[in-house]
Amino acid sequence: MWPHGSAAEYGPMNLSLLEILALLSAVALVVARWLPAVVRPHVTIAAGAVFLLAAIALCVTGIRWQLLPVLAGAVVAAPFAFPPLVRSRARRVRWWLALPGSLACAGLIATGPVTAWAFPVPVFPVPSGGFAVGTRVLQWTDPDRAETFTADPLDRRTVVAQLWYPAQNSPADASRAQYLGRTEDEARTVSEALARGVGLPGFLLDGIPRARTHAIPDAPVAAEGGRFPVVLFSPGSSGVRTQNTAWAEELASHGYVVAALDHPYDSAAVVLSDGRTITSATVSAGDRAEDERLAADWTAIRAADLSFALTRLAGLVADPLTGRLDTGRVAATGHSMGGAAALQAARRDHRFDAVIDLDGYPHGPLSPALEQPTLALTQAVTPGTDPRYLPRLAEVLTHGTATNYRLTIPGAAHLTFTDGPLYLPPVSSITGSLGRVESPRVVAGASLAFLDSVLRKGSGDLAGALSSYGELNVVRPGTSR
Image 1: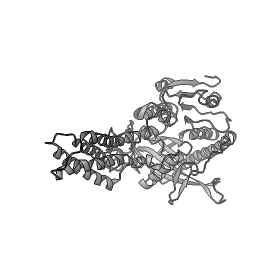
Image 2: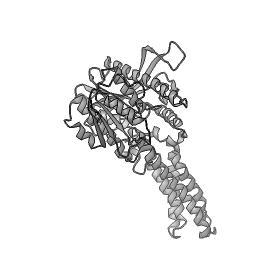
Image 3: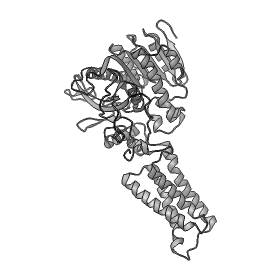
Image 4: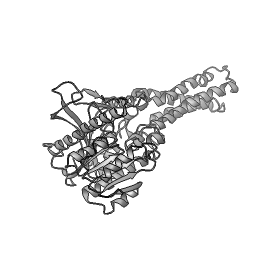
């Protein structure tokens, strides 16, 4: 049994068992007034008792904001449900006066499941590969790079990496990894920073820190499988290392080691091993030319972070993964600005053998030409929605010296390529129209098809495999298509 707040406790209604009991008992309190007199006392007493116990238990374990209108509706209904049971001469409120009150209470209570559906505790898809998944967090400081976001000349660049890797099977009752952080406190810090970054009140995303993923912290590395290819990942602007956890767990279950980075002063919040929290310091200037210059600079820093992380992974000693990483088969990947960083890292560092750009505009210089096979996964972009994106991306892909692929995912939005569909409202302009189940399946499936073909020489028909996920454009060296 997973601990309270884990994904396993939240069913199709996006409510836990305690929350469902509170909801049903609140509804019963409202309905009791309209039941025949012979059953009304029994229903009222039973509903009141269940509601009280559920409310007390929720107070102990933590009440989500979505349950507050449910509790309010029940509290408002209770004074009209109980007095007639203890005062024999108490007169019931006339039906035409009681009806508006009952409807108002029902409306309050209905707000609970609706908002829980819109802002659920994320439930992560079960990885489909043959390996269990382990995860751990590492922190490295680069002695050769100054931290340019601070004025301290002695400050060195530090990155935090979270690894997902093929692991041995763990006991069924093993504790699953917290989402967004190593602890619930860290997860709440990151969740609140993410909410602030998009201008939302922090409480709207308070379900995210309650989620558990499928990975086991510090699980033993899988005994079989030999040496595993490595996938480096950079998140979007103000994104965090865990923003693509579903994607990372799926890749790890198929025999890859995924190392996702936090970029201090760019990521929304980075909690360092000494307890310090570094929040984002990247701010738009409001001028297109200046913003593009800043984005190019930030992309270059991220690209250097990716290369530095690869160096540290290649040099692991006295580590459970020592000898199990195949750093001769490495992909640079990223979402949004992280995708741009992956492209830049591959240009500078030929240790990267492949690139995946998840809906990222290519900031920074376009030379030298890319030599690695590249997959660009994008939403449906038109000259009307962004006149610069397609020409810029086409220039990157057509000038490459390897065969490159642009795959347009029908129904995708920018956040489709993250965990966003798992916990944000299913509004097509925000998370796309693929849904909470299909979004992670499509993005991870296309990524795996590409990685298996390029890093493992697996699929003989990569174009055919990718075409099953969307509209494919194959760009061969020396051609425009």
